[in-house]
Amino acid sequence: MVSVQTYIPAALAPFIKSFWCLWVDAGIQQPYVEDIIPDGHHEIIFHMEPRIAQRNPALQNCGYEPDAFFAGQNLYSYMLQLQAGAMLYGIRFYPHTLALLFNFPADLLTGQLLPLNDVPAADALRHCITENPACTFARFEKLLTKQVAALNAGKGFDYVNAAVRLILQEKGNVKVDRLIQATGVSVKHLDTSFKKFVGITPKTLCHIIKLNYFIHYREQHPDKSLTDCTYEASFYDQSHLIKLFKTFTGKLPKAYFNEVNIISNHFTGM
Image 1 (cartoon, rainbow, N blue to C red):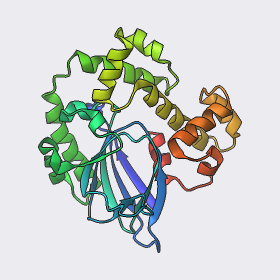
Image 2: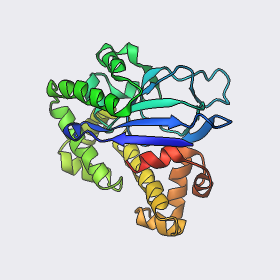
Image 3: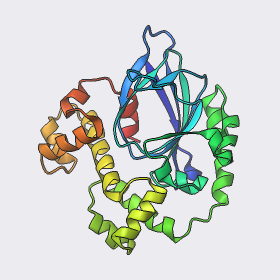
């Protein structure tokens, strides 16, 4: 029904998490529909053909996704509808690196889509797209390697980098006080820097990463109960998990796991 191919560019590892290609079986009778959960990462997404993807199609005047766009942090899940035969490419950044590479505040993207042609420095990526994933990934890697070589991150990014790396390492189970201790800056300074590079607060990113780890753990251990998975993912109790789940997805955990979530399940493990 839906297939995803992923490539991790080792030379770009501090800045790019992966390149991916997703395609929908051309033989399906109805569009593929899935609720996409927040995952804490920015992306640049390219559609091989126009008018193949809609977000929240039940809403009036929902429109189609742009052919190529920046996707910012999401604080709520959204319904994605893909037409049969759809083919997409994506560049998946770490939670804090897209804004560094393209030099604009990440909070401008939060909850938004920004067409690629609005940022001239990124528009050259369009020319990397081919129908061959390996060729496209190689072109992405070559172009972005040149861009990374010219970077001058600065101390503001270094603080955020240290905090984000700790959050990812601990799978979201880290208190803000520990982030402050690790970076040596004030809460206000860290919040301001996160707004610039991540687009959300440290606490919110922790919650999103922790939720994604729970979902990934549950998918990897279907024989375990939700209660067992709750504690394995470092939640104090089920009520805490349920509250977080409803905040970001609008659903209860059992309802989520009763649905088909091919795309979200792939990326919660990335």
